[in-house]
Image (cartoon, rainbow, N blue to C red; front, side, top):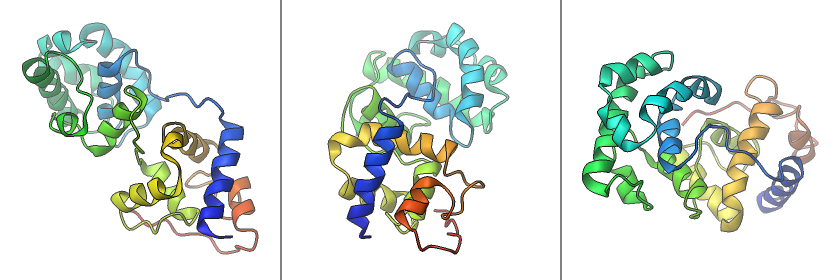
Length: 217
């Protein structure tokens, strides 16, 4: 099966499984989603969702987050990985929004990526989910499955993003990146499937017998 044919099968099956894929991170506007994605670096969404209710109660807007001492932000998010760096980034992020963007989350990549703690993946999530702009955020699940399904070579996240954008129509990117994440967590997990076990892997590669080694970027 050619790569383009595999892409069609993947999109079809995932749309059947997840016709309306939810955003895993709890949020209520652009700012809280931006904060949640920053916190999710090297951390599970479940863990992030456990700390954000308290964080958003005291710092649910750029104004209130900027008013919180960094030490207080750290106290709230301490259960998360890289908490000291993230606390500093959130304080700088909130102040940057107030000082440079009138307290509004900007709707363009250069502005978003200029903020503390905001990389390309984080900006892509916000641009896609909040502003409806064509973007394909690549997290560890997507990078892993793109390699496992032979859609990209796993050499880099940048390469994976480029390859996926070439394979799938732009109007599908918003839902598809969420669908792949959900499938990677529920069916084609890092330990539960080795490229030969889950339904999609068996359909895409019926003759595959050897496990696919994951090549980290």
